[in-house]
Image (tube, rainbow, N blue to C red; front, side):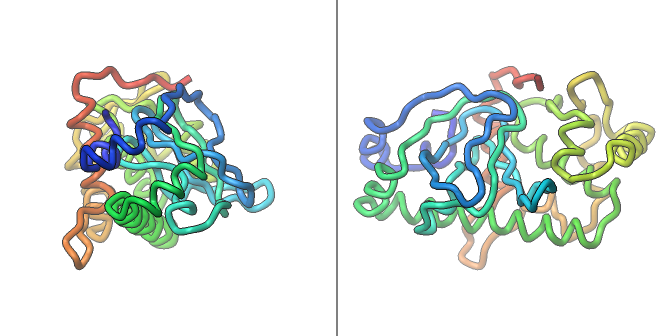
Length: 250
């Protein structure tokens, strides 16, 4: 099982979920959650990346990413049946999904599962806080560098299925500005841009583009209780998927 949350459960708790988990293939741009709509399923991502988006009218901007370190349905984990945000697959992928009522029942019956999902929720909201800070205090090149690193965290190998279009979509930014930022990173031999993907050449150098408070793509810190937060979980994706081929962007 490639999902970090599911693989972290005790065998007893994992067995209690298996009967209600359904393996599904996910398409690029498939919407897993719609803002202010009932959440039908929580998706434990096994491969691919989803973005959680703040939507206002026709505008949208990415708050954070979900890979095989986590799951959609954070509102469910916190006791709500509706999401205030949209969750969309940025790449094709696959997941184990569970119906909302089955998950809520499992959380009521399984204390370890509930604690783990709440810890993951804290990790994700830490990621969104860093996104807000980055959007307010960094220039486009730094913002793009951060999203490249966050995507790199969630894929095996050094080639990530990011395109100008996907980055523009996440940042609600003009494509020309994203292209300029990528060109600067490439000129400094930090990345190599190819059709449908970006190859990371110098992760440490890309980190140097960001500010110190972004610490390894913005999420690599521990909570006061010592629990690992988002990028520490995300690096599980690289370890557990090291034998898999990254899914190309559509």
